[in-house]
Length: 101
Image (cartoon, rainbow, N blue to C red; front, side):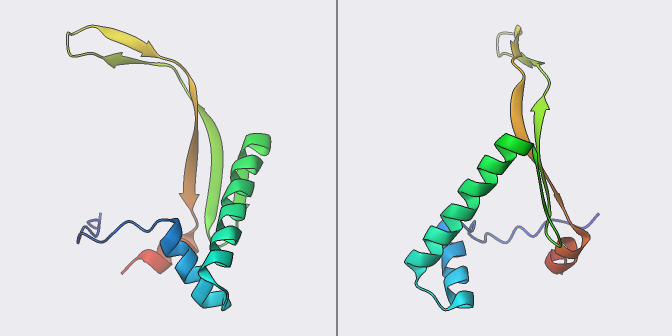
């Protein structure tokens, strides 16, 4: 298995993504930020309503329920962590090819 690329690069946040979108669409960074926020908010709403999002050539997002599980404590005891919702992402083969050096 190839090693992860850990060369101290900064994590891309919303501002970095908005700058990229701004450059690709020739719009202001502010407008790109508004578009990005609208897309992310729409994705969260869609996952809450339908549990799945498929973006061809990018990947699939699934809202899943994590089972309750015991969590060990420092004193040796355990407590049960309640079931909770989480999001799982499965990248498409095309995305994986793009990020593979």
